[in-house]
Image 1 (cartoon, rainbow, N blue to C red):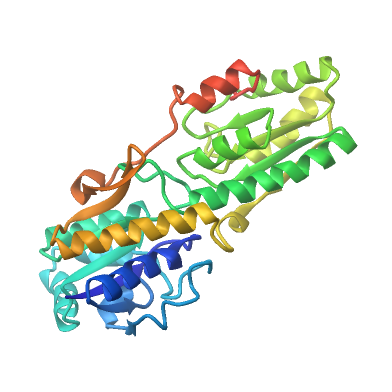
Image 2: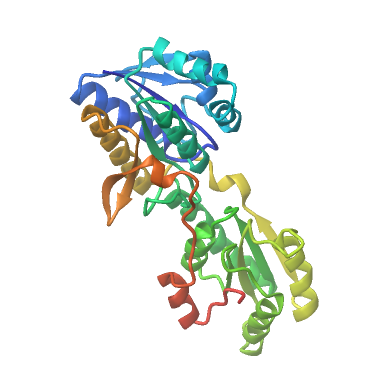
Length: 337
């Protein structure tokens, strides 16, 4: 068999480990031919490929980013859903001209949606979930998440020192547009006093009172972790508003730190390397058994798979019943509501 591999969407620690997991398993165990597709789905259209062998797959386990390059898939997805059949036909033609028996697509929610569309068009595909946000429906965890949480937690640990020394409130903005998994896990691991996630929303006065209550207890500094997707009713980002609001309401000097893309770059954690390796190996097993149209996932702690049709268009979000939120509230941590 001949399989193609591409990565799409934002970069993420662990993509290269996944490429290696798929490729080395396919080559050494199943005797398959493997080609890497450059630049995401646009590379498929342009047939921009390279043969991947054991030599080219060596030394990439610990590398961040992706050796294949990446791009957003929105325009490609629009071609697949276009009423102009000629547009979608050129995608199928590219797949056939490359002589592929299966296409492995590594990416987040948009990528899995696009991969499902390819499946509906009759292509043999396998999806591999990738995102630091951990918000892909159908899998308990995605590679990249552990690395991002480690980076964010270390930043929070360091900010405790500055907050304590200067008796400040430190606002820490972490990634997470619609899902607050990084904020929740890093905030709890870093000993944050207030954690705000998009799913729950927040009441500014609840946040202010939590900080005032700490001050009344002699704790003159606080750490507030905010997911970037937390918004005000008028759609403004909460972080800028809160910096001024907290300082005026509490009288405590307030500063912000935005971690941004730092969370998404760099080498994957050992956990993410091992997870990516297992997901990649399982994807190759599915291909060997001709079980296409699936996304590899983690279910009940084990590597498994789920039909792409069940994943497309869904998000896995933080709920008020999550164990970390319940435990956090019992310990006096405020979630802004």
